[in-house]
Image 1 (cartoon, rainbow, N blue to C red):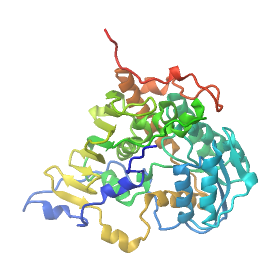
Image 2 (image 1 turned 90 degrees about the horizontal axis):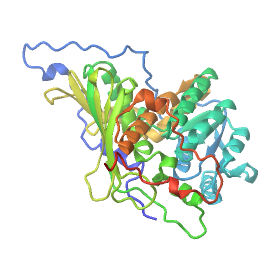
Image 3 (image 1 turned 120 degrees about the vertical axis):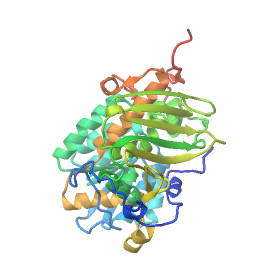
Image 4 (image 1 turned 180 degrees about the horizontal axis):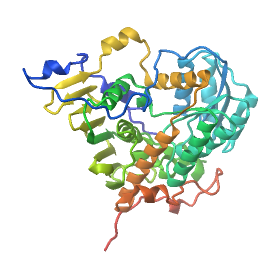
Length: 450
């Protein structure tokens, strides 16, 4: 096994390297006698959601939680939940493989969370047994291809869901997510997704400033997730095709959606969030496989997303060692631009007109980990009895990743209406540990040889 040192947490520090200067008033930057441009909000307060982000969730009803997918992200998410709120008991675990379940079960013992053996479930149907065991809430952290089905079942049973991103890897999964999100809302459920930037204080404050009109009308943006090679699992003796692929899931497009969907969805979602979740009209892209060791995915993608009114987003992601790295977002407007890496907003002349104030934030809050704060928000909505659904937004951004991926795979410009209605379905008809038709899992080649 080879693992890249940059994991899902470590990149958060890349957006907090600049010193604190606080909010810079526009009047300090304007020349003497120059009239400042009028700020017109993109949307009025109340037309967009801004989470309350206290250090810890409110006290209230004791809640039972189950975990579906006991690997690294499932383990991390449940530990984040236990930090975020008191009165939470882990009562059920489910995974495809016993070793991963046992590993999480042992970790939970160290937190005085004892899960009974008869509430530990193994196999492709473990998700149903976890949800049917009497839990109030469930963490869904299986490989992404399974998440729409698991979310659907949890919603049918009236269980609140935390869905790790992405939540769809194909068009069929997207449509199931969107339909289930409406059902969850009708039932008054709380559904939070793992697009944790929505609960990261500098991002939330920047979002508010952009909606208030500080950068004017949005005209475009650039989003990046360029890093070294991600982890992989070499096939071990005795592993069937299915077992190897699931254990190595992050390298197989049917399981992960490829890294433009599995990982880069974060950055695409940030632009969509700032832009009011307007759908891209079409996407043109290219990508390639150069150095990947296992699986059938690409190593890089470059996508031009075209939105309404001629707004373009350039999306770039890469997982190759020895190249320049960048995990950040930029959003441009008629009056200025925001750079997540600087946690700052600039006017069109490059002058800082706003910057996140870490001193003020730390004076008010002690918890600034977005992986914890997303669970604070989740529990607060559950205990307050207020429906809150993030699945529709995350589903839309997940399909954007699928749209860019298919544009690169085929070499064709892909339109939103076409991809959202496509028959694209990555889930195998038969789910069981055993042999697979591996001829179906090949690296895509765009265009033709003519």
